[in-house]
Image (cartoon, rainbow, N blue to C red; front, side, top):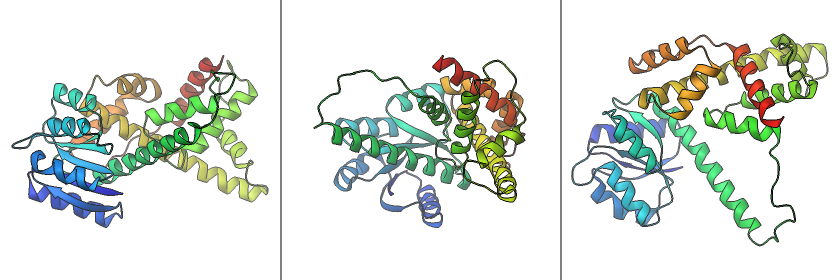
Length: 292
């Protein structure tokens, strides 16, 4: 990925560049200390992602994004800010930013956000490529297609920012198995049984199935924790965010989300109790209601 950094604080620019380089996230192809200087450079070199400070002299982050969009710049934006003002945050999202990074800069947060933004960039390009390839194809007779259960599952996982996590496919397969069983009312079977059934899709011997089921459990746990961290970050930025308001109390133990928010604000290790059964049960219930 090709990054451009706009920040009036030289130390912040250096730290962001170092994080990008050390974690092999891409290349920083340009820097500027204010929006006014950044605009002609960004339009000339067309970076994939622009990391931009909210408050800067001459031209602030929001105004800079607005002018770049007016001039048809199509790259993605990540806002950097020490100020957490709900109105400014809302306006930033309206202008099309993907994520916020909080100051003081946290290396773990930056790496996580940049990887998520890269996923969205690649997804966006894939969609554009599909649209372009279909532009010369005659429209089908049927103009409406019904979404599959997998489409609904992936849409929810995408809302939580975990569609790119390795455990997202395991979660999807678990829900698909439950839907095939048509267990619409009965309680979930034991999680161990679900892991083993997913493992049986690719493994054959008892030893392989046991080993894979344990790996599935760990992948699912890490993926759900990633969702909790993503939502906690959303809650910190904007407590009224629609995704935070819907998913945080419904899919998770909300006290754990609140504890995560506190840990993130204090730069403490982001650990939390993960209730896998609740997550799977609620996701299954949501998907079941969408397809029936």
